[in-house]
Length: 94
Image 1 (cartoon, rainbow, N blue to C red):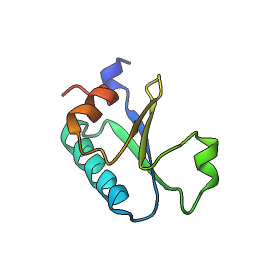
Image 2 (tube, rainbow, N blue to C red):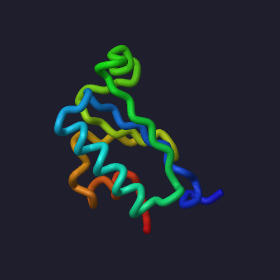
Image 3 (cartoon, rainbow, N blue to C red):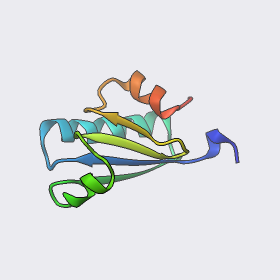
Image 4 (cartoon, rainbow, N blue to C red):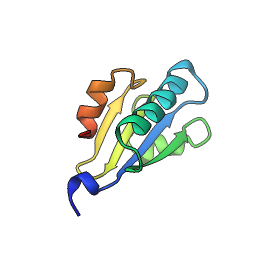
């Protein structure tokens, strides 16, 4: 399986419905639909509902996007509004 064919496993850590969290969710959904159709799996975790996961997963700021597959793990902090930066860090090629 080539790297391009490996689906991305993404986890977005947010804190409820704050403006930055909502923006991060919206930006991630748009980028996935436009640049990675069918090549991603996204899980959104609300740290207000599961605060223990912040420590377990080494999340120090929110929102944080974690790409766990393919390795190596990549973390991107912020609302994901800089699409070019996010795509470079995720190593997404159109």
